[in-house]
Image 1 (tube, rainbow, N blue to C red):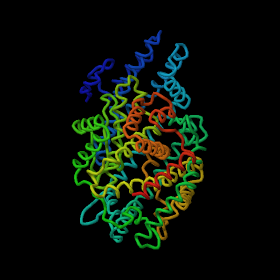
Image 2 (image 1 turned 30 degrees about the vertical axis):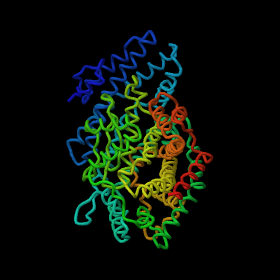
Image 3 (image 1 turned 180 degrees about the horizontal axis):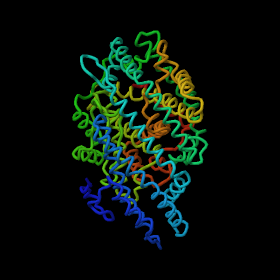
Image 4 (image 1 turned 45 degrees about the horizontal axis):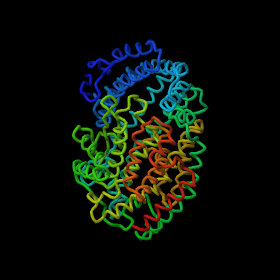
Length: 568
């Protein structure tokens, strides 16, 4: 059924009753756009706006079906509707999009385009033309089917504990309990549940890697890493920069990790830290349980956002009243959290798996930052500029986590300092883990022929390199399959380094806020409002940050974080 409720942004080119659930509806529009005569800059801009409207309608249809499916993966009808779009609608658009991109580039060369307005768009289109291959269309469809299979397998994972069937997200909250026996029992339950599906997940990943390697080779790339860097438009850094970031984290962050781990071990009275000792409060205090219901979580975050900036609070309240939040964990719901933008209505939707933990508060603040980013760009005429590079999109989310820190007392009360300390400790712990996930994928996709057992062995070497403080004695099989629990490895390969890059940007937002809070918020919002219209380094500068993830930037930021932890 067509969406006809987009009253804020009415259709001007596409018929109001056009239903993009079937390809037959979309094809005439693509045909007309490909054959339309363009003789001036004004006509080119009108053509681009019409393309944006068509693509927004098309994109929203897919996004709505994807969201419905992930909200309940065990609903066969929702999955069928999504797969119908992926298999029978979306692939038909790709050859037409290639024609449109080539037409744009030709006219960009003929017409005198304002450089500042068009340089990012021209660069993006030329890059996409370079790696587009029609023979990859069915392979990309197959890749999405494999991703959906991963989501279905993991969404079905539950454990029986405390007299009830619980999702792995619900089980995870027991890792914060002071009772070590409870922590170990629930850790093993969840880890063993993943191992039950280790073999099918292994076979699934092998298929994914082989398929992605073929996509890369078809596109003229040496391997999937080279292809991914082009497809993700990483114009401002290379694989070598990522590997250097891993090394810098080893030199700068691991000493801080060891310092915090030694303190944790001493305070808990342990000889060694086991995996089930990492999420409990380092002073063995009871877990923070800042809310009971989804409504309490949403209301509390609304209060925080209003204090950060009244306009942002109003935007979040609008999302609540429009039904744009699905917060709670339940059986059959895909794991993880995300924010998706319904492109036609230009309305964000937030998906997550809340179970009442401190981390859930941070997650909604994080996804709220993404939503504010989407909202800030919603009046941009070109769809291509309504999204930003992932490295900066994550500054929007992580930056909001940092800007929210002074206002979380409504959740944590007298425990606010404790919660803030845990927030910064998790940043220190996250960076080495991020490096592990990224380094693993660098190895896999440049050593495709090495095979699964070699990949697993390399993962274990990364665990030793980046998590030496954790005692995994007797848990070698769990460790060998630990990468399977990170959905990004399966669903969005190579999308993880962005979190590390953006974390450094967010920490710069935090330091700006310590100096002048209102100015920091203003700069943050200024950067968000640019969407994807400027190159990545300019977006960082607009938000008051430097785009750099080398050791000279990393070292003082980690020093500031450790000073803050010590002060708390």
